[in-house]
Length: 192
Image 1 (cartoon, rainbow, N blue to C red):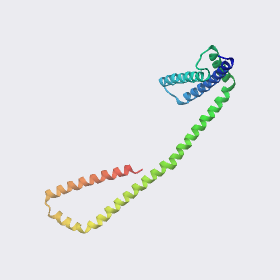
Image 2 (cartoon, rainbow, N blue to C red):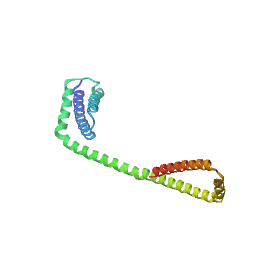
Image 3 (cartoon, helix red, strand yellow):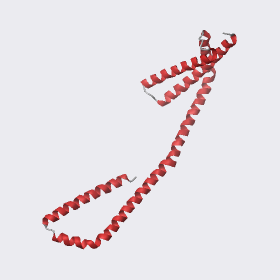
Image 4 (cartoon, one colour):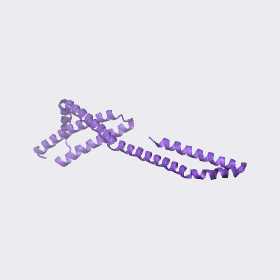
């Protein structure tokens, strides 16, 4: 290996160390804000460090064909320490502002979806239910007016029925009244 490739490797590993430091701070900040349970945190930690290994060895493969020397670890340490000393406070401040911005945008997006999609759908549902209920009441009223002339026929048949026929008729009307009340209560519950 030439001196130039060794210097390039050291510089690349220093940037990888800085990147790992930034990724670690991002991961820890998101972990604290999410409130995950113990085994999920352990799994996420494992996946984080595996991804850092892939980052380092992927960079090594591109820079010096995957040759690992002591200055590779020295470069990672230099990058991580320089990040901790010089860049960490500014990065954590920017990260906090970015997370706050993303949370704010998410809240606004949910509010827009609520007012642009959910509220019109609920209003449309209420309108359709109101129209259907009004139509059903109107049709029942019209049916009542149409069958009113035949009421005298029913009264005449009622008088001609004997006592057992009247009992059966009363049972049928009670059953009809219960079914009508159940249907009415169900429709009222469905209305919002």
